[in-house]
Image (cartoon, rainbow over all chains, first blue to last red; front, side):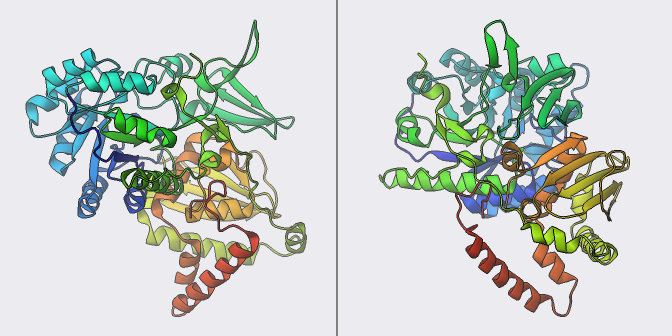
Length: 333
Length: 186
């Protein structure tokens, strides 16, 4: 369906606060995604996110600088208590958001019926990994873009995009989820709260770090998920990045704490027909956002000018202090 | 997978802590207390982001200096005390790291998660409160030099100018100007 495979890739950047939003735009973001300060978005962390007033002024700031604001309402609404989610969609439309990012089909239906002029993007939390599922969202709700899960290789992204009847967006940098996103129950198993329903993976209220004989012990709920000596880097306190003892040894059973960086793959993603690339990290500081967005702006500008893509080191500010092409290259196959 | 050896955040030389140890804390406590009061007055959104109405005390421990900063957070307020040592019962949470890292966090030069991943920053206790504080400070876009200068009206502008020049010289001397420095995005 795609005809303009060579158009510049749109750079979609995270913001957890108005200050981070301004930093992202100053560093060269084409669009910024953010959420309201409640459980309607998948980064519902203490001190993070936007009040309605902050969202209004931030959208004004973004538009005056030629950037878009995409509001994530990407948790699944709670049965019997839809008000926070419906209000989030209504307010996003009223405040002039350029799109809402949704995962819940019920909310997509509500948005399509009540705000026909509001652009809909399908969140990665919907785990739409095939052209069949994407085309269903397009036909049923008129969605304009789908954020692809971080489990596809570049050839798979190209195949899905070729057969999809809307734009696709892929993650380009930041934390990785190896699980089927929107379906992962590890956090819920350990704490009773999940990113899918509550907007928090490994909620801070259930995390503890203690120094024990020179070793830092990280716990999530009742589970010890890591023990790190002083010279070992640490990661986020998620079960999927924990180290466990099993019958075959000790180590990262699900996933190593390592971050995605696809700058070397940008030409391939552009050729695959992808419309936009997304940087993960609404929970990160404006210093991180400034550094990463700036690096990607440089890379995209070089790509547009047909120069070689500069790859400055971003590994030191990432989880695990190392980067990978992840599933995009699938070297393990 | 590309890996990169972490680069340590610089610590103050040991003689600084040695020289400060016999000095009384009260003058510093008064000065820092005024600084925090000024920051809260100029950035009211900061306390709005702090979680809940319950009193929480966070110990900020510059581990290359001989004192601990205790931040008391209540609904609508943030106040500061200093202590020689940290009694484990005093604070709900502790944030520990070199002074340069802690100042850089407030100034938005360093990323807190990056410092935590590299073990330059250690956090213990009530993680929810620490996250709320970190996010509130990051959003407030505080510049410690600018905030300090604001206390010195009518000499704020020249103080700010001289301070910036001095910091630029120190950063150049210590080799902190490179964007490749871990967590340093300035």
